[in-house]
Amino acid sequence: MLNKKTILITGANRGIGLQLVKESLNKNFSVLGTFRNKLKSKELYDIKSNSLNIFEMDVINEASILNVSNNLTKPLDYLICNAGINNGFGNLFDSDHSHTSMLNVLNVNVLGCVLTIKYLKKNLNSNAKIVLISSTLGIQQHIGSNATIYRASKAAVNNIMVSVSEELKSENITVVSFHPGWVRTDMGGANATLSAKESANELIKSFENLSFKDTGKFFNYDGTMIKF
Ligand SMILES: NC(=O)c1ccc[n+]([C@@H]2O[C@H](COP(=O)([O-])OP(=O)(O)OC[C@H]3O[C@@H](n4cnc5c(N)ncnc54)[C@H](OP(=O)(O)O)[C@@H]3O)[C@@H](O)[C@H]2O)c1
Image (cartoon, rainbow, N blue to C red; front, side):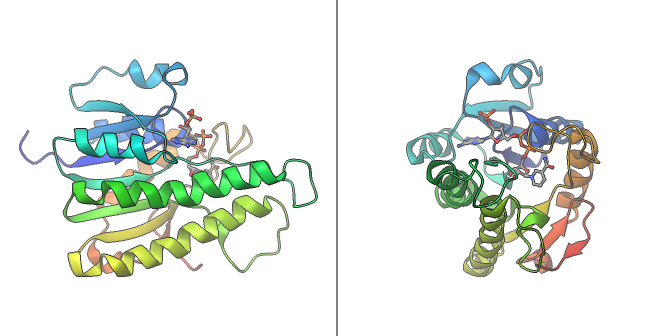
C-alpha cells in the first residue's frame, strides 16, 4: 500500500514494545521492531506479517544502531524509543542501587534514547515524530523516595526530549515523551492497572494524533498532557 506509515519501535520483543508492534500492524503501519537477544524474542519472531521487519539492536551499542540505520530501506514516520530497564524500586540505600546497576539504568534509559535518535535521525522522514517512552516517576515535583535512579533517568529523558525538540524544530520534526501508564509487564509487575494491549492501543492512537504543535511536550498514554 502506497501511504503506509513506517514506525520503528525499540525493545520490541516483549512488554509494551511487543504490543506496540502488534497494535501498529493492526493499524496497517509498516513496522520495524528491534530486539537485542534472539533467544528472548520468540513471540516477535512468531508474528507472521509482510509488514513487519525485525532487526537486532542494542540501544547502548552505537555500531548496532548504525547497522540498523544502514539497512533501512524506507524513511521513518515514527521513531519510538521504548527500550528501558529498571534496577528495582528501592532507594539509594538499598542493595538494588549498586553503582553498576545505577550506571546501567542511566546508560540504557538516557543514553539509549540519545544514541537511538543520534544515529537514526538521518533515516527520518520530513515531519517525522520521535517518541521517547518516559514515566510519570520522572516528574520533578514528587514525594516518593523509591526507584531513585529510575526516576532520575526518566526525568533526564524528559529533559533530553525538550533539547532535541528545540534542535529539530527547524526541520519540522516533532519530539515528545509519553507515560505508558502502569502496565502489566516484567517491569510493571502483575498488579499494574493496564494490560500491555490497553496501553499500546491508546499509545498508537495518541501517536497518530500528534502534530508539530505538540513538540516539546510530555503526554499520558491517552493523549492528555502532563506537566513535568
Ligand atoms: N511497565 C510500566 O508500568 C511502565 C511504566 C512507565 C514507563 N515504562 C517504560 O516503558 C518502556 C517499556 O517498558 P516495559 O514495561 O515494556 O518493560 P519490559 O517488559 O521490561 O521490556 C523492556 C524492553 O526493553 C528492552 N531493552 C532493555 N535494554 C535494552 C537495550 N540495551 N537495548 C535494546 N533493548 C533493550 C528489553 O529487551 P530484552 O528482552 O533483551 O531485555 C525489552 O524488550 C520502558 O522505557 C519503561 O521504562 C513502563
